[in-house]
Length: 293
Image 1 (tube, rainbow, N blue to C red):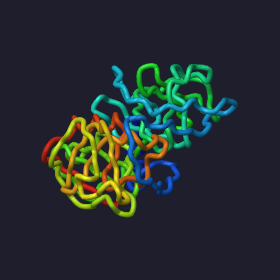
Image 2 (cartoon, helix red, strand yellow; image 1 turned 135 degrees about the vertical axis):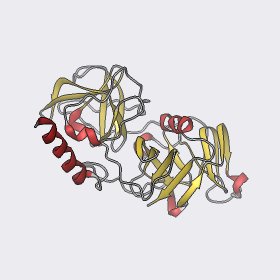
Image 3 (cartoon, rainbow, N blue to C red; image 1 turned 45 degrees about the horizontal axis):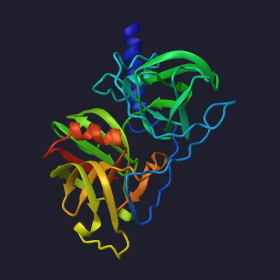
Image 4 (cartoon, rainbow, N blue to C red; image 1 turned 60 degrees about the vertical axis):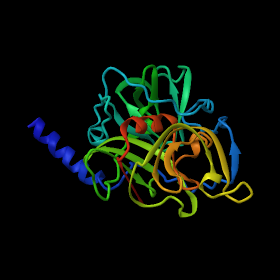
């Protein structure tokens, strides 16, 4: 009987959430970016307060999700329909404007980072801790890294328009998420930046070329230095070109992490470094990249 009730509960949950995308999360508006020339020295982004009776968060870029020994242990049934990663975690999403990452599930534990609103996080376990908004549950998102469960919900991906065999990537320009699939199974989610003014092409593409570390210069794709839209970017990591004309998936270090989830590029799909590194290992020449609204 218990197994039957659990199965019915999950079926109802999937039906309720399958087409909603993310639970209880406001969308960020479009983000404009001007022309620029930069080296690898991103500015720190400002975060919003997140925990009651506490100072503003210490803002640092969202840390790389680190694997732990055992993952995905939560008592909340909603997490059973969230993405399960290759290392056994469940993918959650930050529902507050920002949340402190602490070394222990306590409000007085040292802050080691900040996870920003709408950013995916990997949940390995739930543990008891100091209540936040009346919720005493905390999630372990890596070794000695904890966030309050009051500000994290399961990440339920929007179903893709179509699926493909093998490893492939679904890029949704309406939600600003890139979801990695193994066949029909989602295994990873990343928040992105995309091309302003409709500059990111839509359609079904394949990875054509990969460059581990490069300098991106718009003069090589027909945008000279004296024209709007010129860029010169050094040490760009994990670039995977999917369309002629310089369109690629790649790390974007010049946009503050807090500003991800909007438009701001000349057409490429920008990623945080740890997400770009995962997709570098996950995809290969010939892998499908499906981009749509």
